[in-house]
Each structure stands twice: as structure tokens, then as C-alpha cells.
Image (cartoon, one colour):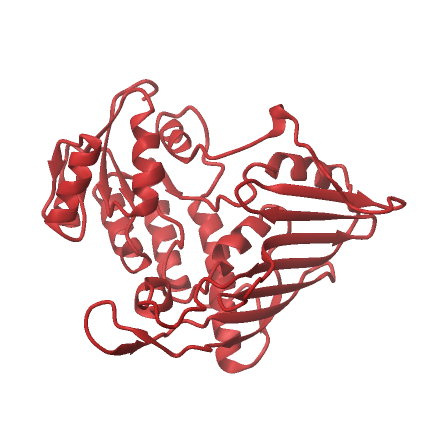
Length: 350
């Protein structure tokens, strides 16, 4: 269907959908966003007015059932990802689902099975934005054995995002909505999986320093049910080891980073407004920052990639449902390990 017109419906036009997905889709020739279904009719109408979208739907089920819609973009909280995805695929729609694939591994596997049952439909996850700029350069270094054999992996996501206990409970602190994902654990593990294998063993601990938060829906406080600190030790098939450190409670914390240490060299990536890539190998005196050439500099093109995959112009590179199941398996393993205070081997069973 290369060049065909494409009619898209939006389920859940949250911040990322309004900032990225809607403008990105409207910039692709031949794409029309025909309707929105938000949690309330008022919020749906605000979005349609802002972006010139012709229609609102009373609920997501009405949108998914509309036979004139070709594809559905799901920008809801994770508690609806599985249900809406499976319904959309069953209705013959292509699906782009927001990150945090699901609340847990069981839901992620259900989504993957639904996609496998409809192989003629594109099923894509919004990818982790971290590392998109430097991915091609890192892949080239790894392909050339620039760091030798992988020995250690360090993944860090630590800041003061949830330090202020007077702020309302965020949806990411509610396990019923967010599921087993903690802070940026899933999204940075997704990034790490582009450059390192899935661990074969994890041993995790978590802590909830602020167990209650002000109630966003009324008076008083409500429990926070997602940890605000997590540490994970990992092992890999080749004998390499890893350390994952995440926190939302660190004043002047180190932010988001991934380090790959090998037998011959080191890669370090610092994530911010732009990726900063550092590389060094013996006998270099220190790491040096790599200036990525224009032909290797990547970036955000999620909406164009989704449309290109539907039109048969390109495959999904970032991120397939199989990729999502891999990071959800790690997230689930971390939660199970911390709860049992025991190491767990991957892959996980049912």
C-alpha cells in the first residue's frame, strides 16, 4: 500500500502524543488523523481543536470499532495498553503503542501473541529515545570489536524526580496503572539491549522511601506502590557482570548513563538533551568524546517509521513487540527477585 492514504485514530492523547506523535504523523504525506478518544469528552475536544482533528469518540472501543480507521496510536497509561492493543489488532488495525509496553510480562506476552495472530498488521512500540542519536556509531564500534569481549555493563538512572513528598502521587508510583516497571528501568534496559545481550540471571533489591503521597483525586494521602529505588546485579552468558542503579530520590544524582566495559576498551554514554558518547581503549590515557558524523547521527523518526512499515517501505527497527517482551521479561524478573530476595534465571517461565 505504498503511497496510499492512511487514516489514524488516537486513543489517549497524553503529553508525548501531543508533543511528538500527532505532529509527527501530520507531517507525513497521505496521513490523516481522523479522531481522538481521551478519558473525557472535554479533553478529547481540546485535542481535536488544537490539532484540527475532525472527530471525537465517546470511548476507545468506539474508535477501535470504526471500520474507516486503518491504524490506532495508543498513548494511554500502561494499564490499558494490552486491552486496547489486542482489540485493535482483532479489529484489523495497525498498532503503535506507547512505551512501557504493558504492566507485566503476562500482558506483554498476550500482546505479542495478538500481533503474531495478525501478521499482516504492523505492531510497533514507541521506542526508548535514549541512544537513538549514537546507536549507529556504537553498533560500528561493537562490530569492529572496539571494546573486545564484554565484561561489565553499568546502567544508571538516578535523579530527584520523586524527592518532594508533598507532590501528588504520580501515575508511575501507582502499580495498578504502571505495573512492575520502576522509574526508567524498562526504558534504559531497552536501550542497553541494543548494545548488550539479555542477562541470564538477576538479583534485585528495592526500597520505597516515601510510602505515601498526597491524593491527586481528593483529600488526604494514598499509598505509593512502586519503589523509588532499585539496584540489580546481573550476569550474562559469556560470564560478564552488570550493575543497574535507579532512584528517584537522589539529590545531584548522576542522571542517565550506560557504560560498556570490555577486554580492550570502554564505551560510556551520557543521556540528556543530546546523547554524549565517549570511547577509549588501551593505551589511551582517557576516554575521548566522539563527534558522530552526520551520516551516522540518528534521531526520532518514530511516526515516519510506523507509516513506512505499514506502507511496506521499511521494517520496524525500533521497537518490535518481541523487543518489548524482552525488556518486560527483565522488568518482571527484577520485581520477582526483589520480592523473593532471591536471584532469578532468565528466560522466565510462565
